[in-house]
Amino acid sequence: MQSAMFLAVQHDCVPTMDKSAGSGPKSEEKREKMKRTFLKDWKTRLSYFLQNSSSPGKPKTGKKSKQQTFMKPSPEEALLWSEAFDELLASKYGLAAFRAFLKSEFCEENIEFWLACEDFKKTKSPQKLSSKARKIYTDFIEKEAPKEINIDFQTKTLIAQNIQEATSGCFTTAQKRVYSLMENNSYPRFLESEFYQDLCKKPQITTDSHAT
Image (cartoon, rainbow, N blue to C red; front, side, top):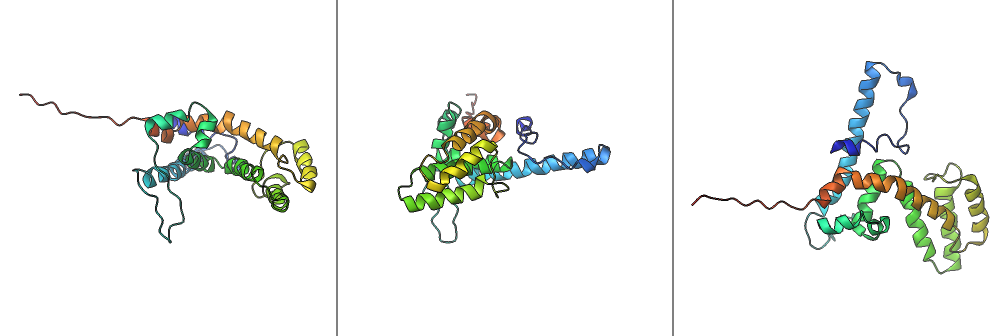
């Protein structure tokens, strides 16, 4: 099953390896070590949701714990995520797992931008709309932004003009492009991942037959 997960290693979201490493045996060993480290980190991030949501119950509300936990979906519920990308995003557990998957691919800025846009569109106050628009622009759009998303120069220029008089549609074009990027690239790989495949497995019922 691990072969599906290694697809993420080869994706363009993952930083390319140092070219100065060369192509000798030591370099090959170094690359394999990096892959193993990446795989371990990927599994650690995603298994968090299984470990903290393995059984139904009330979420932890202790003051020391700030992390939110979600109820693990049934195999039938998890299978619904494969029917449409929107089904995955509509599930709190599915969204959290998908975010962890994108972090493992070093592409979490895509889902964070999409969520920021969803929140932005619900904003009613003109003052808050303006301040949120500037924050989204500085976080995701402008050149060398800390979470810069991959969109074309024309769209960036249009956004820079639109946020001068912010409206709820300032980021519509960029959000659609990022959505399409996730739907066509990261989403299919998520569905092929071992983590998702395990969620879809129905528990095997073993019956012991005794001869009488």
